[in-house]
Length: 369
Ligand code: FE
Image (cartoon, rainbow, N blue to C red; front, side, top):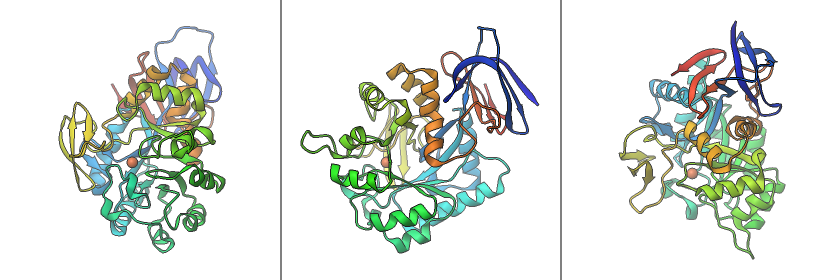
């Protein structure tokens, strides 16, 4: 049994109060408000990153057990207690290799922050490929999907205007896979049709999405106008602070999901790296292809959390929503992302500047400053 006393407890549902938390058997056993108005540290649900390609030299496309362990441990320092290694557009064999590897990894570990795989592509629109390899981008095929899906695949980013999208949806739904719309040139009509088919999530909004025009709302307009939940890369590079604040003002904190979209260079020095077979240059933390296209980010989750707070001046309760609760809700991850009795003790303790001090996974300390 562990007790954390006199912390500012931030629960995404109940709000913020000073209290004590008792942890036992990997769970939050008791949460009690105290009368003491003073506290030194803040306690929030552990962060969830549903979209990350890698960091500190590790990349989803070339994972080994050792590398995934290293990645997972590094993310504890960022307060991340759940994440989805994310692929880039790749051949079927490569997708299968990644999902097989991650599946076995999760199975072998008694506790892990790896939740499953996010396939970002290859069923996207080559016109909005971003930093993805155009040679392997293709239409959705039901046959192939049946082969590449497995219980470890939790999230798939697809473009709604490509051939095969509507045949793929029931297959994905049957497997419990969440679909996110992204890397698309879809117009408003395409977006609305997908939305009416039950897809309510957009990948790294508004990057690699058709812009808003007053006679054609595009994917960006659809993201604002319809009740989509939006991933955002809040690094201050992919979108300016004012855009982040505008999304927050219009959509509210319930509809925003922070992601890093980080590549292997995240957490490393500037230099030249490889993303899915493409050369990426990192200068002052900005990752680009030779033609200047942004190639994923070097954002780390703790920084994303601080940036979002700074750009929007949101409350801590709202910060807990965008950094864990909304992601868990959308991916149907049970018993996490609340500071509430009976929930998993996946929690992060922060100082007043929101720096990570301690991270707990299933009630065990996995990172401490
Ligand atoms: Fe992307």
